[in-house]
Image (cartoon, rainbow, N blue to C red):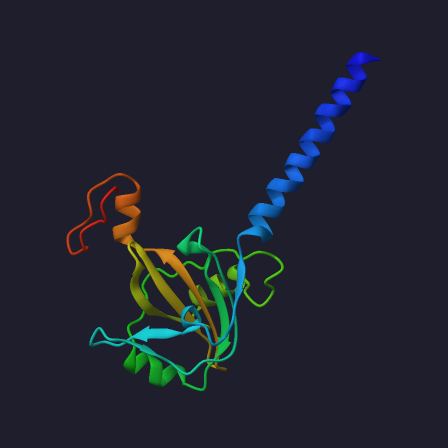
Length: 175
């Protein structure tokens, strides 16, 4: 009888721990962004290297203080893709990251597939928004847009313990 009680306790403890871990990964550290918050500004970098606000409506966004990779946003823009491709720098290796399931406007798999198929175009939002991370935006011809943060080549090298590649800003102290 004692063994069953101990085994039952271990199972209940594992379930409680698992539920707590799930909650912290999916819900606890994310905050919804208000459309008027400074972090909600959607920016794109021109060919001159200037990052400028773009017109963005119907903004929905999430972010967290725990990691720059937690930022995701959905928006619409009246800017045409043709105008944007003539004005803003394209982003070479866009890789949208999966958002929590409750943030339903952001479907990273669909966005990634559409970028690969040419149904959407990715632009550099802001380079090194936080050292080693770029803000990326993807825009569809109908004006729907998505934004996320992803590691750039400088961050990938430095966070792997390697020296920063040529052309990268100096890494912050402690990396």
